[in-house]
Length: 202
Image: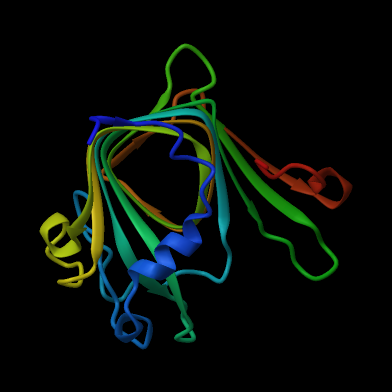
């Protein structure tokens, strides 16, 4: 297999994640990802998805496998868990629709738009979908997920790569954690009412 696999992007990753999660896991077993710290057993996610976009993500040490996250009421969502040892994100944007009844609200964060990208170490993302143009270097597809992370379910599907580069990244996620997250040129804004329209990252 070639060391570099191109044009792997523009994939509906929620389908990929659903294939990776066994029915027994969806029924109730919670998988935890470790990235300089674990998703603790008592962590629950909100019912809100959030969006992340970037002109470019350049990462070292990529791992991906299936998992699930749960809401406070016990509702379970199958996700693709992606670990990246170190990531640089150019022109990063993160947004969430935080609307209340009768009050449209969008919270938007931007960073890495200047001379220095935003960066993260020990990054873990629980995502529903991912789009972009991706290049993986020294990728291994079909590994046992528990060899990538001891908390993953043995026998389930996993993949890893030495490097990952994604341009025109668009991602819908439910949870993100990192050992460190450096947001160069951070800009945070709350957009409400008519100003909220069109303020999500995509």
